[in-house]
Length: 444
Image (tube, rainbow, N blue to C red; front, side):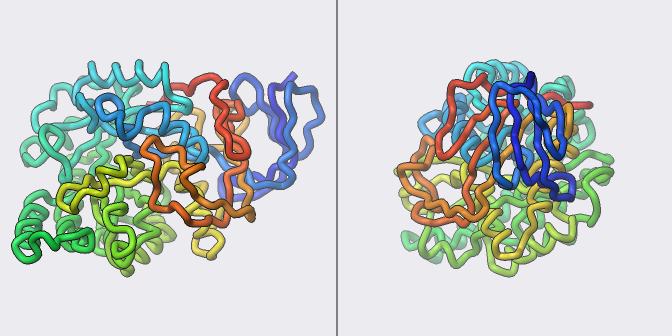
């Protein structure tokens, strides 16, 4: 007997779209067949709805430990399930920072008691923790996160000697946030002198400008080439940076690239209406940059799409520009943003699946996830492709309680999310009675 049978699913997987049934047993996909007539504890007719692999978001900030007034593992994993995200990699800039293996292990222990979806964590780099990096368990940590800008204190790696050691010795994929800290600092001073108290979010993309990104990302690429390192550059934002990356399939690349949904969606004109709500690092830039990111995605220069989900409280975001923190909550609505692109003919369902699931699994060597295959974990998301979804305060699940998309109507809805074979979200409701998520395993 199967645990769950999904009937009449239009499966989007590995470059093709086919109608099939899926049988699930013991957390995994047991059978994929054009028609499955067998006993099961539960049967759901998807009536032709599109079924994708659950999204694997390799870049989220869930704010735990230490910053849980903004979000926490339980609340943000719950919001992710409502957005079709069944697995995530979480960031190390919490309190205390995840810059030691002891703190890394503590986060895994915490998630095992709280996370509603599947989880892994990045070890964080600093100017001084190379010995911690050398001894990390490569089958535990997702990757090594290096903030080459846009961080403070011990999480900012601005020593070239430290960067040399990191790229030389890291046993993990190096994942980077690339902005040149000195360039940003100089620009901040110039703009404050010019605008004073009139400084606003409309200046953000000019302070954290194209050159600040390119200086840093080109340094990262050069270091990776020097040491033959595995490098993945997070949240690229500029047309100029696209020249640093090569076309082709993610398999076999040692230097890969990523774009986030908000950098694909917004441009600098949106600062007028949304202000600090869309203040993020690296910044949302001009329309020409946004279009170049989409083109690079189609050219397979950009390999992965993520959210960089980064919740802050509304009061924090409403502070004056200089004091407002950078980042915006996105994990609940990232797939719907991409589906709007689908409806506009900008991106196909096959590409969405490839860049949000398949390529993440391939790049980070995730075991048994990221594809709809027999024997793989049953992490799935079903879409109501033509059912509109209006974002409101009542249906926002982020702990911070707001979204820059509040009041917007998306063209598609998330009908159902299945995590490890269990229906975790359906028709607007998260099922919190299912088993907790699992620690992600790797084939390394």
